[in-house]
Image (cartoon, rainbow, N blue to C red; front, top):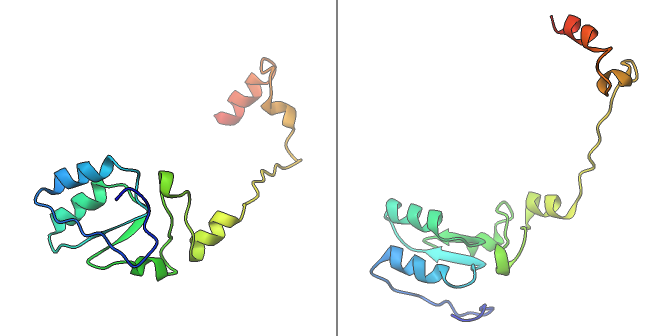
Length: 126
């Protein structure tokens, strides 16, 4: 529980107090993944709302990694951003931001000094 595990070993931590175990886990670096087994919706929601982690499963393990429709990635020390499907495209591309103005409106109307332009602006706004 002191380093990332990249192998066929899955630590299973039994607990009696959900709030206590989540408090203990939060003292460690944020995990890349977390898995929770329960049929109790209140407990599931508490787990999801209070434990920060990259991705995970409820009542399953590791299948979220193979789902191309779910972004996969970590938070904090376990990674930045996500990949798979659309998330990969958005992560590895850059949308170009463009603002296009018309040349039909005088641009000097938009900038100071406004003293001479105030009457025209008031007339247009009425």
